[in-house]
Image 1 (spheres, one colour):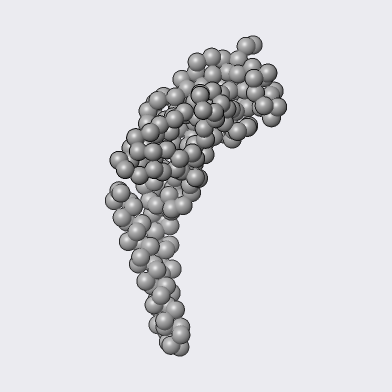
Image 2 (tube, one colour):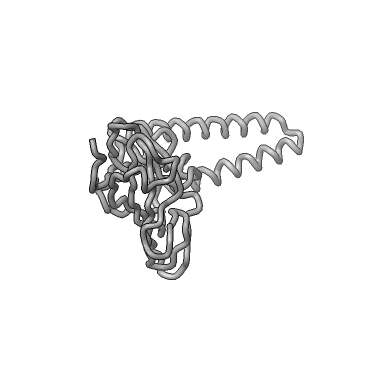
Length: 212
Protein backbone atom coordinates (compact mmCIF):
# COMPACT_ATOMS: atom_id res chain seq x y z
CA UNK A 1 0.00 0.00 0.00
CA UNK A 2 1.41 3.36 -1.07
CA UNK A 3 1.05 6.79 0.50
CA UNK A 4 -1.48 7.60 -2.23
CA UNK A 5 -3.60 4.61 -1.22
CA UNK A 6 -3.55 5.85 2.37
CA UNK A 7 -4.47 9.36 1.21
CA UNK A 8 -7.43 7.98 -0.74
CA UNK A 9 -8.56 5.89 2.23
CA UNK A 10 -8.35 8.86 4.59
CA UNK A 11 -10.19 11.07 2.09
CA UNK A 12 -12.91 8.47 1.62
CA UNK A 13 -13.43 8.09 5.37
CA UNK A 14 -13.55 11.87 5.83
CA UNK A 15 -16.11 12.29 3.03
CA UNK A 16 -18.17 9.38 4.36
CA UNK A 17 -18.16 10.85 7.87
CA UNK A 18 -19.32 14.20 6.50
CA UNK A 19 -22.05 12.45 4.54
CA UNK A 20 -23.28 10.72 7.70
CA UNK A 21 -23.21 14.03 9.58
CA UNK A 22 -25.21 15.75 6.84
CA UNK A 23 -27.81 12.97 6.96
CA UNK A 24 -28.05 13.21 10.76
CA UNK A 25 -28.42 17.00 10.62
CA UNK A 26 -31.12 16.71 7.97
CA UNK A 27 -33.06 14.18 10.04
CA UNK A 28 -32.91 16.59 12.96
CA UNK A 29 -34.09 19.50 10.81
CA UNK A 30 -30.88 21.48 11.40
CA UNK A 31 -30.71 23.00 7.95
CA UNK A 32 -28.04 25.60 8.66
CA UNK A 33 -25.75 22.82 9.81
CA UNK A 34 -26.61 20.85 6.67
CA UNK A 35 -25.59 23.81 4.51
CA UNK A 36 -22.28 24.30 6.34
CA UNK A 37 -21.39 20.61 6.21
CA UNK A 38 -22.49 20.42 2.57
CA UNK A 39 -20.24 23.35 1.63
CA UNK A 40 -17.34 21.70 3.46
CA UNK A 41 -17.93 18.39 1.67
CA UNK A 42 -18.29 20.09 -1.72
CA UNK A 43 -15.13 22.12 -1.22
CA UNK A 44 -13.18 19.07 -0.10
CA UNK A 45 -14.31 17.00 -3.09
CA UNK A 46 -13.51 19.85 -5.47
CA UNK A 47 -9.98 20.18 -4.07
CA UNK A 48 -9.41 16.43 -4.26
CA UNK A 49 -10.65 16.35 -7.87
CA UNK A 50 -8.38 19.27 -8.82
CA UNK A 51 -5.32 17.57 -7.35
CA UNK A 52 -6.28 14.27 -9.02
CA UNK A 53 -6.61 15.90 -12.45
CA UNK A 54 -3.44 17.96 -12.09
CA UNK A 55 -1.46 14.90 -11.06
CA UNK A 56 -2.90 12.77 -13.88
CA UNK A 57 -2.06 15.34 -16.55
CA UNK A 58 1.37 16.27 -15.20
CA UNK A 59 2.84 12.80 -14.60
CA UNK A 60 4.66 11.24 -17.54
CA UNK A 61 3.55 7.93 -18.96
CA UNK A 62 5.28 4.85 -17.61
CA UNK A 63 6.88 2.29 -19.91
CA UNK A 64 7.80 -1.32 -19.16
CA UNK A 65 10.47 -3.21 -21.06
CA UNK A 66 9.61 -6.48 -22.81
CA UNK A 67 9.23 -9.29 -20.25
CA UNK A 68 9.39 -6.79 -17.34
CA UNK A 69 6.92 -7.87 -14.69
CA UNK A 70 4.40 -5.43 -13.25
CA UNK A 71 2.48 -6.30 -10.10
CA UNK A 72 -0.94 -5.21 -8.87
CA UNK A 73 -0.57 -6.26 -5.24
CA UNK A 74 0.28 -10.00 -5.56
CA UNK A 75 -1.03 -10.44 -9.11
CA UNK A 76 1.56 -9.74 -11.79
CA UNK A 77 1.69 -9.58 -15.57
CA UNK A 78 4.37 -9.11 -18.22
CA UNK A 79 4.25 -8.63 -21.99
CA UNK A 80 6.65 -11.17 -23.47
CA UNK A 81 6.36 -10.54 -27.20
CA UNK A 82 4.23 -10.68 -30.30
CA UNK A 83 4.41 -12.32 -33.70
CA UNK A 84 2.49 -12.12 -36.94
CA UNK A 85 -0.05 -14.83 -37.65
CA UNK A 86 -1.38 -16.09 -40.99
CA UNK A 87 -5.14 -15.76 -41.42
CA UNK A 88 -5.62 -19.50 -41.76
CA UNK A 89 -4.47 -20.07 -38.17
CA UNK A 90 -6.89 -17.58 -36.61
CA UNK A 91 -10.64 -17.33 -35.99
CA UNK A 92 -12.70 -15.62 -38.70
CA UNK A 93 -13.04 -12.42 -36.62
CA UNK A 94 -9.26 -11.92 -36.72
CA UNK A 95 -8.76 -12.28 -40.45
CA UNK A 96 -7.92 -9.35 -42.69
CA UNK A 97 -5.60 -6.45 -41.99
CA UNK A 98 -2.57 -7.42 -39.94
CA UNK A 99 -3.06 -10.21 -37.40
CA UNK A 100 -0.80 -10.48 -34.37
CA UNK A 101 -0.60 -12.90 -31.46
CA UNK A 102 0.73 -11.33 -28.25
CA UNK A 103 2.10 -13.41 -25.40
CA UNK A 104 1.47 -12.27 -21.82
CA UNK A 105 2.74 -14.02 -18.73
CA UNK A 106 0.58 -13.94 -15.61
CA UNK A 107 2.21 -14.78 -12.28
CA UNK A 108 1.62 -14.59 -8.54
CA UNK A 109 3.96 -13.45 -5.79
CA UNK A 110 1.51 -14.49 -3.07
CA UNK A 111 2.94 -16.84 -0.45
CA UNK A 112 -0.18 -18.74 0.58
CA UNK A 113 -3.39 -17.75 -1.21
CA UNK A 114 -4.82 -18.61 -4.61
CA UNK A 115 -6.03 -15.64 -6.60
CA UNK A 116 -7.42 -14.39 -9.88
CA UNK A 117 -8.01 -10.98 -11.49
CA UNK A 118 -11.57 -11.22 -12.80
CA UNK A 119 -11.45 -7.69 -14.23
CA UNK A 120 -8.08 -8.03 -16.01
CA UNK A 121 -8.01 -7.24 -19.72
CA UNK A 122 -5.50 -6.18 -22.35
CA UNK A 123 -5.35 -3.96 -25.42
CA UNK A 124 -2.71 -3.73 -28.12
CA UNK A 125 -1.41 -0.26 -28.92
CA UNK A 126 0.09 0.58 -32.29
CA UNK A 127 2.84 3.06 -33.12
CA UNK A 128 0.27 5.84 -33.62
CA UNK A 129 -1.18 5.36 -30.12
CA UNK A 130 -4.39 3.66 -31.24
CA UNK A 131 -5.59 0.77 -29.12
CA UNK A 132 -7.35 -2.42 -30.10
CA UNK A 133 -9.11 -5.09 -28.01
CA UNK A 134 -8.45 -8.77 -28.76
CA UNK A 135 -10.31 -9.93 -31.86
CA UNK A 136 -11.10 -13.34 -30.35
CA UNK A 137 -10.70 -15.46 -27.23
CA UNK A 138 -7.17 -16.42 -26.13
CA UNK A 139 -5.54 -19.17 -28.19
CA UNK A 140 -4.36 -22.60 -27.05
CA UNK A 141 -0.63 -22.91 -27.63
CA UNK A 142 0.47 -24.76 -24.49
CA UNK A 143 -0.52 -28.16 -23.10
CA UNK A 144 -3.72 -27.86 -21.09
CA UNK A 145 -5.51 -25.55 -23.50
CA UNK A 146 -6.07 -21.81 -23.65
CA UNK A 147 -5.54 -19.69 -20.55
CA UNK A 148 -7.10 -16.30 -19.84
CA UNK A 149 -5.80 -13.28 -17.94
CA UNK A 150 -8.59 -13.84 -15.39
CA UNK A 151 -7.77 -17.51 -14.72
CA UNK A 152 -6.94 -18.55 -11.17
CA UNK A 153 -3.38 -19.28 -10.15
CA UNK A 154 -1.83 -20.56 -6.96
CA UNK A 155 0.96 -19.11 -4.80
CA UNK A 156 4.05 -18.61 -6.92
CA UNK A 157 2.37 -20.02 -10.04
CA UNK A 158 2.54 -18.58 -13.54
CA UNK A 159 1.06 -19.24 -16.97
CA UNK A 160 1.08 -17.72 -20.42
CA UNK A 161 -1.84 -16.18 -22.31
CA UNK A 162 -1.87 -15.91 -26.11
CA UNK A 163 -4.03 -13.00 -27.24
CA UNK A 164 -4.97 -12.47 -30.91
CA UNK A 165 -5.31 -8.92 -32.27
CA UNK A 166 -6.26 -7.51 -35.64
CA UNK A 167 -4.65 -4.20 -36.62
CA UNK A 168 -5.14 -2.22 -39.81
CA UNK A 169 -2.83 -3.20 -42.68
CA UNK A 170 0.54 -1.54 -42.23
CA UNK A 171 0.09 -0.86 -38.49
CA UNK A 172 2.77 -2.21 -36.18
CA UNK A 173 2.43 -3.06 -32.48
CA UNK A 174 4.07 -0.73 -29.97
CA UNK A 175 3.07 -2.78 -26.93
CA UNK A 176 0.27 -3.91 -24.67
CA UNK A 177 -1.83 -1.94 -22.21
CA UNK A 178 -3.09 -3.98 -19.26
CA UNK A 179 -6.13 -2.99 -17.23
CA UNK A 180 -6.83 -4.31 -13.74
CA UNK A 181 -10.26 -2.85 -13.07
CA UNK A 182 -11.19 0.81 -13.02
CA UNK A 183 -12.11 1.38 -9.37
CA UNK A 184 -10.68 2.54 -7.07
CA UNK A 185 -7.59 3.25 -9.18
CA UNK A 186 -9.41 5.82 -11.32
CA UNK A 187 -9.86 8.11 -8.27
CA UNK A 188 -6.52 7.53 -6.53
CA UNK A 189 -3.97 10.33 -6.90
CA UNK A 190 -0.69 9.04 -8.32
CA UNK A 191 -2.13 5.77 -9.68
CA UNK A 192 -1.36 4.66 -13.20
CA UNK A 193 -5.11 4.14 -13.72
CA UNK A 194 -6.15 7.53 -12.36
CA UNK A 195 -8.65 9.58 -14.38
CA UNK A 196 -7.19 11.12 -17.58
CA UNK A 197 -3.72 9.65 -17.00
CA UNK A 198 -2.34 7.70 -19.96
CA UNK A 199 -1.95 4.08 -18.81
CA UNK A 200 1.42 2.36 -18.82
CA UNK A 201 2.65 0.74 -22.02
CA UNK A 202 4.29 -2.69 -21.87
CA UNK A 203 6.62 -2.80 -24.84
CA UNK A 204 6.84 -6.09 -26.72
CA UNK A 205 9.52 -7.88 -28.66
CA UNK A 206 8.34 -8.47 -32.23
CA UNK A 207 9.42 -11.96 -33.24
CA UNK A 208 7.98 -11.88 -36.74
CA UNK A 209 6.34 -9.41 -39.12
CA UNK A 210 3.57 -9.88 -41.67
CA UNK A 211 4.66 -10.58 -45.23
CA UNK A 212 4.41 -7.61 -47.58
